[in-house]
Length: 423
RNA sequence: GCGGUAUUGGUGAAGUGGUUAACACAUCGGUUUGUGGUACCGACACGCGUGGGUUCGAUUCCCACAUACCGCCCCA
Image: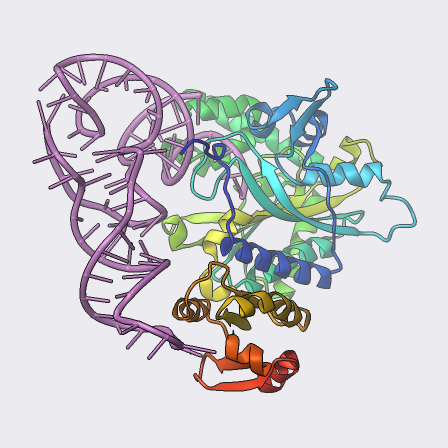
């Protein structure tokens, strides 16, 4: 085994790739019903794009980014997430201009890169599908985005989703809460885990997320964001919940839910699922939220935005084979006997394919029995057998592989005859 | 970046410091003439992740590295 793929990368082989195509086709279909259009942006950007958007204290920027200098001494980075590049494109292409209908709604899919220790469903090159909507601060849009995510996952057959929502409030509320958390945790500083001591300095909100047992005890009595919302933030959140109720979305408010990236405010949400594929532990399959300051941060006009992203590898682990509609039918397997038939097969195959049949043949000069075995193995609907007799009589033997019935038809009209047989 | 477990053929795997590395599945071929199943027969590891070391001798012991998986960090 001389060469091997880089750590944390995957080859997606045929069979597996069919599942990806299916998932992507469902995304395309569902999102377009909500009038989200696909956007494709580069998989690398200026380092600063990610640095500005994610916040330079975030782990993504500080230790997980694949950054490099190109030959022109430009500092670039492989994208660690999708939103920053889309926002950059939004600003650079002036999509905030008056000629564009707001909200400007897009979705994307593609590879993302983070330098970290691989684990099941977590890789260095991974794939996300995400959506973004710019130019409206409306809670109705929040609900549209959330319900579209639900719709997408439901369509893929993912059941038992738990929808968790929270709000980070506006900047004022967030600031007040930040201060309250520091006030609360500081007296416990010595008891906190080492990680949380650091968090207290860098990002106290993250302490709420700690998995350390002792931290959890301290967190249990920590102040709740919901008590620090100013009136407008509170009203917005209440209204959002009302809208979700009216849509009969089954959600829970999780006031300890936070976000790793700095740019979020107001509504944030995660869809969780418990599944044997993850040892029946609860994992997040989709996460998103509102980021009203991000466009401005990247040099655009003050523009509200909201979006979500989901990891395709994780999603794949949740999908059962029966949830996937994979179409890989073989209509015709061409069986040839002898050199004349072999030569004629090139043209016959071409005609079959041009007529819309999925068709294939053996290329290893194998015996008839082996060719039929392969046809059977590939679950061909029909075999078309050509030998010296057929060439001489200008006929072809068409066999229905399900019933075993075989008929002789004119070789000249093979495709028409096949269509007739198919009904 | 830290800790743990693992690494044998196309696949699932057994196994031992020392002549031919089980078994099963898959694949291919055969059981005479141009048709899919079953049965039977046969073939199928540049040799046991890579590189060193210990040893008379290592796939089996030791070390380093690589990769995979699990946990932490973080997150999709």
